[in-house]
Image (tube, rainbow, N blue to C red; front, side, top):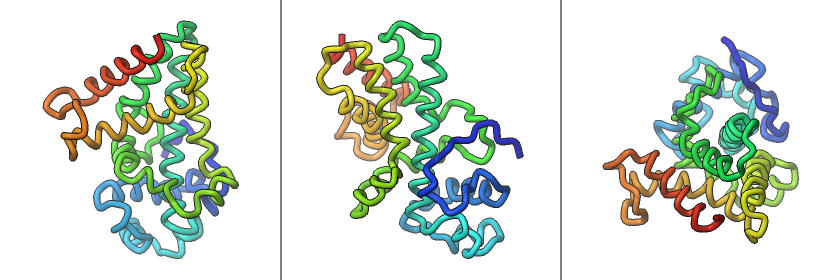
Length: 224
């Protein structure tokens, strides 16, 4: 199995990095598939162990619990979006164009080939949309934050906010806008599919393109 991209995720997320072994990659691959199909609440280590013909004990050698596995997956997605933004803006000088690239990267991250065979980005994105907030809306947020378990999200926000400030140095809330852009992208997708009265975008049209257009509209009004 070829792994062409490897992200250095915080060591507090795992006991043994699953990217480094065949079994670990299999755990990640089938965890993404299973959580995207049955949801995080119904998911447990016994079910994934049965799915991959392994044991629960094997999974606990990689992750202390299923919460940290979910947090590992969301961190991987944050790193993937950061990678896309950095890659696609590297030779771009116009901050306005960079803003457009950020929006496109947020909306179409799952359409890219991540060069990592053991992760289905579309299924992982579904997990981020449905379950992502559970990774950091927890009673242990202060403890987990203190050991850097949300660094990948913070780094993503810094990347976006720095380009926002580059585009408009006088904009007062670049970090707030950066984090809201990420959350809005996923929330509007969720609303369009399940709570359509909470949004003006619709599944009846090309939803991804409509969300991209909406985000660009907001940014145009706010920044330029």
